[in-house]
Amino acid sequence: MQWALIFDVDGVVADTETLNARASALMMHQLYGAEVQPEEYREFVGTGDERYVEGVAEKHGVTIDTEAAVERRRQNFFELLKDHPLPAMPGVMAIVQAARVSADVGLAIATSGNADKQFPVIEGTGLKLEWFDAVITGDDVTKKKPDPQIYLVTAARLGIEPERCIVFEDAPAGVAAARAAGMICVAITSSVEADKLADADLVVDSLAELSLAKLRGMALSR
Image (cartoon, rainbow, N blue to C red; front, side, top):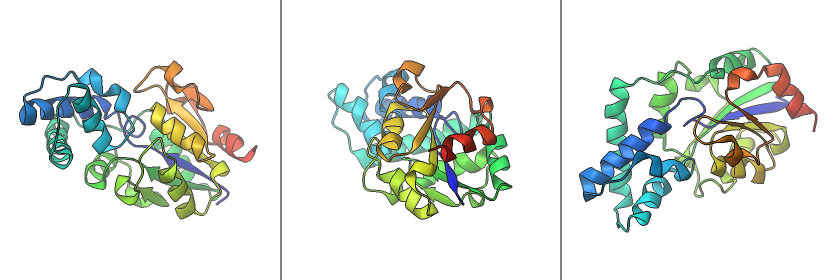
């Protein structure tokens, strides 16, 4: 492998952000009687499950049991998912399938979310975990985005230099993490507005706008 593609999950592989926010707002009502709007979670997208629930709770002055909150949110998420199956985001499957038959590129998943929540989402889209050379989740790291740890761990697992890795992200924290790791970042406007992703090397509305050949040129031109 000469270069690699690294996919975040929420908002990149699948459009989970709406369900994440609804599940979290419901959790706050169920456990703490707090009325929270799903939109309030937007600024915490990509920061990891724990910070995601803590951030909005802090804004409302609510002290939460983080472990219990994350678990209830997870339960709510899967209840909602039963009625709202999530396909792969546009362009994801085409890029992954093209990469699978190309010997020079590695594939990885790097998500701040926990494995028990993210693996069913990934496989529910039709993607298979065994198609990826590395799968790193929030369970595998001690620091969450915007810290670059998760991407540096992923590069090490792949055996690829960070500057030869392209990260697909949808959140400012993820963009910051990818850039801090020394990687190329392509941001998708599925979760936040383009201006909040301006630090990425490239901002697109959909991965369907990209080809493996274009991505290869970006990775190997450095």
